[in-house]
Length: 625
Ligand SMILES: [Zn+2]
Image (cartoon, rainbow, N blue to C red; front, side, top):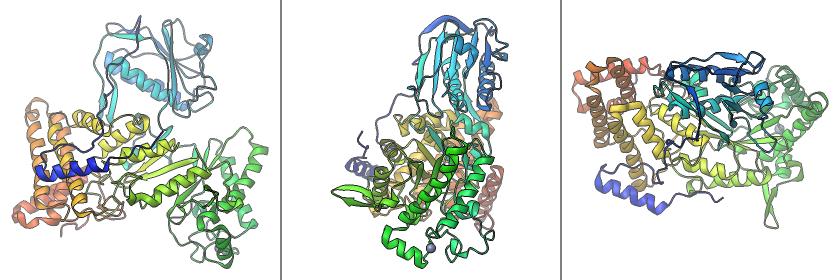
């Protein structure tokens, strides 16, 4: 499949229309809107799952069910019950009776009906199979796995049954229905990206929210060990091997990848110890440390000549380590399959290749990656406002292409969703997120991580980004723009139109600014908080959107005060960006009394939402002094 490339001319025209019409155009993305999940339901069986609020069904799970299967059962019961009033007994397969059964995972019920997942039905970690037989419906995930796919099978089953859909931790939609038919299923679901992860503090502190968005978290997931920058800090911590200063760079902040067999053996032994103590681990990460100060010893200098780059040095080192760990695994844990993951990042992002007879090949035979090695492609310097195919991203795109030539199908992607210098300004990737995802999909990536703010809550439409991105990772055919609309309607309700206007104002301003200045402002460290971008008329327009949003929900204050408070808080959260820009750049437009009130509002709401920083490693103290 050919990568989808944004039509640059169309984009330019759109931006120019934006200038001419001064914000009257409401469009952030120019792709064709899709059909949102509609009432595309399977045939009915004639049986009822729930009738007049009563159900004879049991939820069946295996004896000693994996935690994910138990969780799937809990979710099914909780939301089917909330929607219909019928809460079902959860029983093990030994306790199951009759035919009115919803079977989760590899139960004796599924076995008896001959419903199983075959080798060819490659469900990965998170796909599932759902099949109806008579009165019984079975939901299964990959055999022998964690059962994760059963959770998503349950969510889709609930979507058909009662219109279940999760927009945010505190915005879960379902219909109240007294009668629900049993549908006739015979299908498998295979998400576009098998492993989906988004790094936001609001997700990492709420496992229910995380799971309901169909996401995983490297930090708490039992399948992962050594996640992040681990080569020194986890596998060979400084201070532990005092006599071996030659194992590290002079600053001791990276390994010396040329240190040789004694260091590689120690590294491998520590990795083996970790695998022995963590039998569930499938992904073992050997991530370089977070800096570009690589070892420059004599051996490394010689090896640089031989292998061409630090990227090459790292791979030769990793090949040696993985060979040792795999020798242990083959003997002691032949049933386990371990993926050894390394960062292609900073000074090692370019693949160590050369061209031979028109073919891209490893720079040296020693570099040819061990078949168990996986590259975590991390384009930290990319322009996230432009597709990867754009010239602004030429280096990263070339690197991706080259990695995929020397280790096809073994690339994970670490992407970014926040500007680390501006927690109160929207990151400018609305327009290009899907294009990036599509490119990675086309290159066979099935593992995608989008890192947002890990340590602070931020405004910037966080919940919307999480919803839209997680939906796209599940199904790449969806439209970013249509998902934005769906979210805004569900989340802001009466204020949805005004909040859409706020979103469009921000998108349009970025588009106009990019076209008129040619500036690249899509980097994670780009200066996106300037008054050149956020001019007074633009910020006033944003403030007006907030005002209209608040006016739209005003009637609820008397008719539904709880909903009013919820919506007001959601709007005020986005207003923090507006207050931040007003107080930073346009203080003089407001009286001293108004300013004092704005500062008070800013801190009141920032505190209410648990925000603690204006930027990475920043704080909120004295921001407007
Ligand atoms: Zn060295």
